[in-house]
Image (cartoon, rainbow, N blue to C red):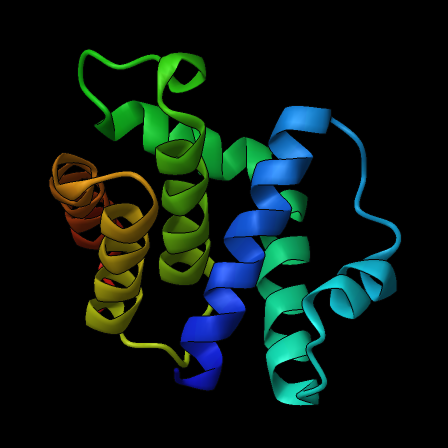
Length: 136
């Protein structure tokens, strides 16, 4: 598995935990020990996207809500909501990752952890966010 793909999977786990438990993620070292992850690039990218998504959560949630027609963010499946947060963070705030890569990775996460229909749902919303922010 590619390093950034693996990092995104970890990031999804951490955002899911943050979303459910409503507590700040302060002890990432215990998470890494439980995952037996030693690659520093994976750890760094995971931390960057998780902390970035949390830092910009209000703006990201507002953007997702504006494009999720007939959906209330709090009523979405937790996995879908957090995949959208990760993908949106990359689209809006990470300039060195092409939009296509961010969207494809998010769709793959949604399909793997939620289902094929979730992949389509995530793709549709992230495509609209991409068009709105003008990222290529």
